[in-house]
Amino acid sequence: MAKAAVRAGLVAVGLAWVLVTQVVLAADAKTYVLEGSKAAALESCVEPTDVMRRKHMELIKHQRDATVHGGIRSSKHSLAGCVECHIRTDADQVPTPIHQKDEFCGACHAFAAVNLNCFDCHASVPKGPGAELASHAAFQAAGVDRSIQARPDGEDH
Image (tube, rainbow, N blue to C red; front, side, top):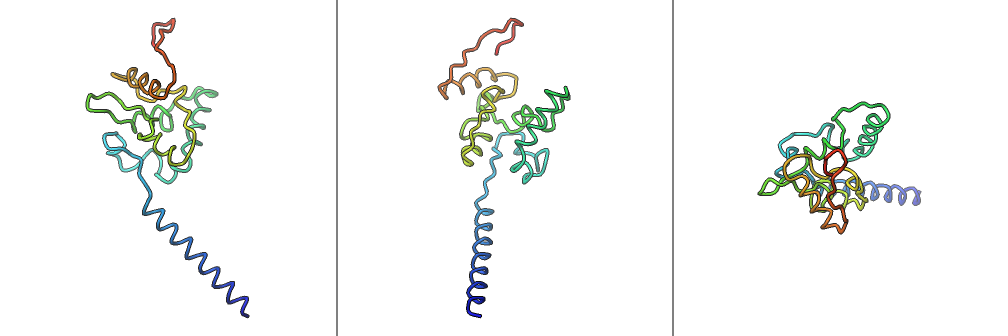
């Protein structure tokens, strides 16, 4: 009988601890949507926030497979679409690379201690004015030599 009472007490304490932890985590939950981005003006992303937080990589991988293997190019879950919506620009309207530690992708991945290597290959800013300069500057700041070179088709990369 005493063992059952102790066990019930421990279970109650454990459940209370879980409840308190969840309340504290919910109160401390950060939004990584930054002011000055298109996303800041929207009520939700292409999927509900809890889905995006947990499954964004699965969505991006699925989109990659559909595009690369199936030739299907939609933008609902594309990495370029994420960058376009979550990027912010500085006072001179130059886009701030999304993977820097204080930006949307970079801040969340730094918090979660996850290596963010998407932008080793993919653009960290949308195409347009200032994109090339911002991307080049971000790589220089990271110590990566990504000199701008002309491709045979005349495009820079």
